[in-house]
Amino acid sequence: SITDRCNLRCKYCMPEEVSFIPHERILRYEEILRIVKILAKLGIRKVKLTGGEPLVRRGCDSLIREIKQIEGIDMVTLTTNGVLLEEMLPQLLEAGVDAINVSLDTRNRERYLDVTGKDMYVQVERGIEAVYNSGIPLKINCVPVQGVNIDEIPDFFAWAKEKKIAVRFIEMMPIGFGKDFAFRGEDEICSILESAYGKMTPVIEHYGNGPCHYYEIEGFQGKIGFISAMTHKFCSQCNR
Picture 1 (cartoon, rainbow, N blue to C red):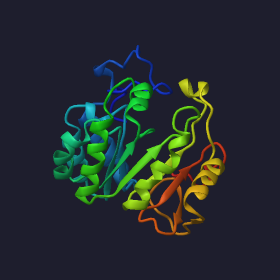
Picture 2 (picture 1 turned 90 degrees about the horizontal axis):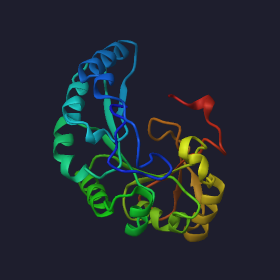
Picture 3 (picture 1 turned 120 degrees about the horizontal axis):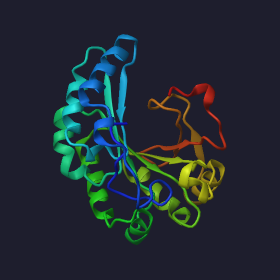
Picture 4 (picture 1 turned 135 degrees about the horizontal axis):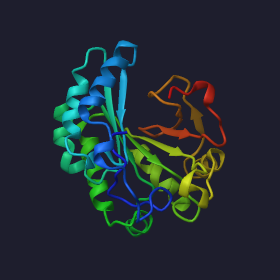
């Protein structure tokens, strides 16, 4: 996590008024690189940059480039809200980013404004399209929230039907502002999807680096994934 700052104010994550960590108290890039070099010698091979929103920290692409040059590091990936993605994608690709995850909880522009406090949905969708067209692996992460996006579930997975994109649902955890929202579990989402698209078949082989497990649906180009910390505990398999 290279910053606690973000250019969105999602209701269940960050309030409008928030106190950020002073810049002088967060790790300098030189310190991050030193830590990664030490970890690489201990066998760490993959690094994911997150935040806050990592792309709001100046020089994120340069950090990726330097991490990629560390002996032993095989993969550097990025998790982003996608607001700055289209603008910064050329630099990220030039730096050598290996894959990108985009966090997005609605495909409805008005709802996006209501959830995030910012009218940025169009920019995010363009960023997703740009990453897909670049050819690097792309995953879209969605948190199902009652009263926000449950009716959009089939629409979200239309992405996985039409394109080789992994669309994943992450169960809301009762932490921070998330305690004020009712989470929707994996079984409920699977039921909605099977009603819309047909039988879901579990993917046996491991796909990706984290605790997500995946399903396939006949006729879909992409995969459907779940990170179900509340209903399907994965502590024994977690690599974090």
